[in-house]
Image (cartoon, rainbow, N blue to C red; front, side):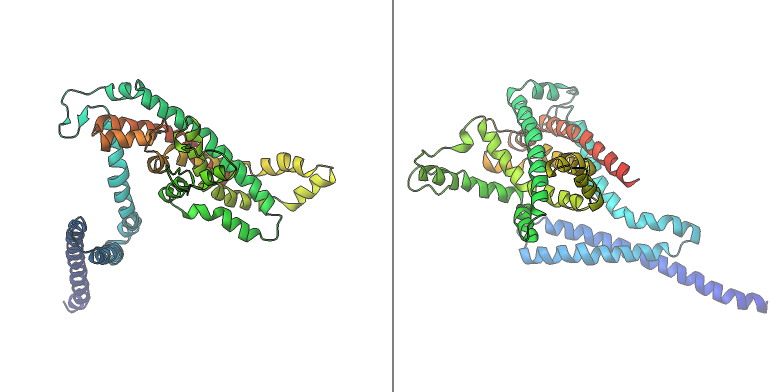
Length: 371
């Protein structure tokens, strides 16, 4: 009896302490969940003071998530060792998995399902309308067909020019004294959002109807005795004027990545090529490019994915008018302007399907280079 009491006292104390920790953890989880719900509703209030919204967002996004992690980890630490080691990794990836499911996977499934129905603002989903009518109407619409052609132009010219110019600059800048300064200037547009770039280039292409031409391009044209032009109205060249903006934005990205790859080319390989009598141009095409081809493909596919989703530049510059529309802008117009949710969802699915092969190729390329 005495030994049982000696052994039972600490065991009971530990048992009580474990259940106390479990109880506290569960109460904390419920309290934090309730706090997240209340703060979310508060942040939806458009009349709330902006300073208070910022404070609540910081408290919830930093301290709240931090407290939730600690609380759940404390709860998991009360489990038996085998269960604890199995569950703990899932605790840390659970928030990311939940966010991925709520904001990416569920909307993707919902959008795909909605694309097979006729659904409009105010009326909702029309019962018994399941079918391919949204896809048929999109592909038989001349405006959508024009948007697909424009997307093809973007896909051909933006990645090719961005990567080519970026590679040439990476080779040339590597040979000058002020390399870092030159790269900083070329990379600077990457710090500008697509909307900001659209606003900047809108002023470059701007044509004043009276008074002095404040648009840079028309001011130069007038300086040489020409007539100002409405550059964004000239078809089909207005598409290329928009493509220039994306090339301007992405050349710096391509230059930085490719410059790192070029610096990784072994000096012994270049020296051996020179000893064999190869000139600089031949070394560039037959030594450097094959050696960094994996990086070139990765940069090209990354820019291609970005181009497939292009929306901001077209929306800010022309809103898709003058035959400059792209498929992402078609999706926006159908869903949020015309209120045709079914056709807007179908356009989104078309864009999603177009992106998938490029993403799969990019992932496979990265895996092959890693292993």
